Image (tube, rainbow, N blue to C red):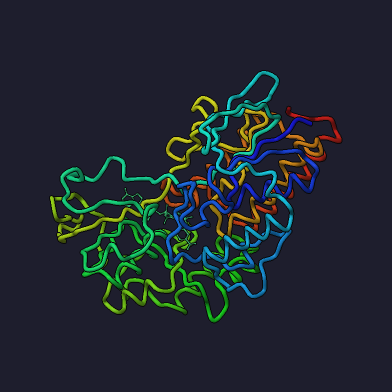
Length: 445
Ligand SMILES: NC(=O)C1=CN([C@@H]2O[C@H](COP(=O)(O)OP(=O)(O)OC[C@H]3O[C@@H](n4cnc5c(N)ncnc54)[C@H](OP(=O)(O)O)[C@@H]3O)[C@@H](O)[C@H]2O)C=CC1
């Protein structure tokens, strides 16, 4: 079997490396930075980490750990990025993966070649030299929370705004916002974490949003929330999960309107969850002001959609991330507007040998899903599983899109959503079907 290329040594890339190594598949992994961990390596010198100093994961460690390597017992329930980066270091060392990772080596091009092979061009940052190598398959694990998504088009008046305008990707600590009048835009997890933090040092922090969000706590009745939502509740039909969660939230934290937040018009499971223990208490303290979305900027002030205005010194756009593969031409795969059609979120139907690891946004955590995806890809590489014909794969991607449209608020942030437990079951089923295809000799490729 031809050698395989893994792009990125973040949480998904190292999961892929571990599985490939365990399965005896020769591979090279390329990582732009000097260390593993991707987004979870604070101040990562690959320039792609969006982690801020106070970041703690909002899924519990039991939900985020790799199946092959449990997190240490003494790790907190909701570890910080420091704990998580340490865990990734020990994962890589435990499995002896480090020598297979070319650090400070950026993949700059990936080209399809005749015969289903792939040409990979890498730039070595220390020497600025490039090298080319041919691989039988490429596993793309470059992450999807590193390229800032700014409002498109920009807010009217943005060019003439006299304050600062930054994206959450570049937020590290609240100090630069001390004594400032800050506007945080969005109501995802970045917005809530950042608004809570700036509200402690700013003169005033305004949290503006174009729709409400169901705020989930990290604990419900003393139990990590995802221990409830990821276990018995996750196996129930969606409507039962929805009702159960709605009831639990109503009992534990009451109505969001009573904290000054707009009542969400969508179902609890109709948006990627916003998880914060601190937001509601900061609102209760009167240290955060809630506003609708900005309508326009007027030099040193922001006019909101309800006609109210605020003088603002700094805007932090917590408006999410674009999916991007800078090393792939759009003709190969085009992720514009975060639309990307992959069979079971991994396989490019018309590009044999091109796989995407960790390109999901789960209710749950990406790490064990990336690991499970890698096992499926290893099956495909070793001929233990086969894919259906491309048209069958495209049917699956259409059905997935239709399911997203039925369930989720229409937003560019909801194009790669999965429920962790259900998705793991889906991958297991696909592996069984893929093995049956091999036995029948019914391979699509
Ligand atoms: N502690 C943790 O573990 C953390 C995890 N994360 C994760 O990182 C990922 C990214 O999160 P995040 O950075 O919050 O981004 P998200 O994409 O999740 O949220 C973006 C927010 O910005 C809003 N928005 C986007 N564009 C506009 C616009 N033009 N005008 C007004 N509002 C806009 C969205 O609203 P709409 O819904 O209407 O599109 C949404 O409220 C998520 O998976 C999140 O869970 C992030 C921070 C902390």
